[in-house]
Length: 124
Image (spheres, rainbow, N blue to C red):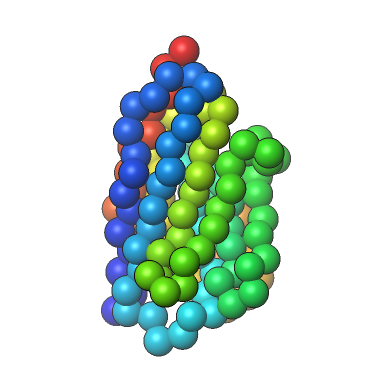
């Protein structure tokens, strides 16, 4: 059974930075698709960034390009989301998700495994 555990959320002022971590367990392969999604109150869950851990291919939502960076540490089975220049509109619950088959996609419907989420709050 695949388990995903997020950490690193918190409260920060606009312009600040946070780094989220997602520790994965239960996978038999190191070649997986792992993504970060977020959901603000009253809004749908949206894809933020995705990485293919087998080759490093990444995909970002337009709203975070140039500010967020997704990365991996296969020795720790962990994926990170470095968030810089945070804006109030980045506020929401951030979820880690994973799947084992292509494509590299920001669509949440493709992802089978989900973490419990970590809250990010950006104040102006």
